[in-house]
Length: 303
Image (cartoon, rainbow, N blue to C red; front, top):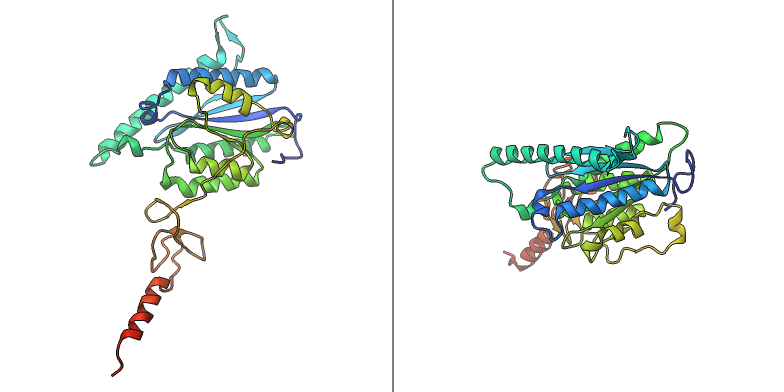
C-alpha cells in the first residue's frame, strides 16, 4: 500500500498505534494467560523502539465499555531503563493499563446493574470501533502536527469475537483509514477468524495474521508486524485468504448472507421493510410479495 508522499522523516521510521484487547470475558476463557500475553507484547514494543531511535509507539486499551490511551512514547519522560531494573515503558504502560482495566470493570458492573440481566460472556465483545476511531484521530493529529512525521500504521491485537452492532462504526473507520492511507494490521488470537479485521486489513492494505501457536506470539509479532512500510515492499508477508465480506444488518445487528439494501443511504436489512430506519426513504413492495400477489391473481377465477 502506498504511503503518504510528503512530511516524512525517512522510509524506515514508523508510528505504530497498537490496540490491545483487555476484554475480561475473553481472557477468562483463553488458553494464553493475560500476563503472558502482555510479556509478549511488551517485548515486541521494545523491539520497535530499538529498530529506530525516532520510532514512535502509541498503545490504546480496548475494553468492553471504554477505550483509552495507556502509553505514548512521544510523551514518555524516560523511555530507557528505570532504576537499572525494569524498562520505563513496561512500568508506565502496566500502571496505566491496570487503572484502565479497573475503570472498565466498574463501568461493566454499572451497566449490568442497570439492566435486568447481564450479557452472557460468550456474546460480549470489545469496543473495537472506539479504539479504531481514537487511533485514526491520533494519526490525523500527527499529520497536522508539523512538517515532519513518521509513517503511521495501526496494529489490532484482538481476541474477542466481532460485535455486529459495531459494524457501521467499524466500516466507517476502515474507509477513513483507507482514504488516509493508514494500513490496519491485525493479529487475531481468538478461536475463530474475525470478519471485521479481515476486511480492515484487506481494504487498507495491511496484514492479517492468526497465530497458530500462541506461545510463540512474540515471534509472530516481531517477524510479521515489526517491519516498516518501506521494507514490506521487499518481503513476502502473509496474504489474506478467504476474507469474509459478509455484512451485518442494521435492524437486528446480525451477520447475513443476503439482504435488502436501501438505494439512498445503502443501509442493509435482513428482511423487507416499508421504510428505511436510517434515512426514512419509503420502499416499494418486496419482490417475493409481488410474485405471490401475481400468482394469487392468476389463480383467482374470473366472475
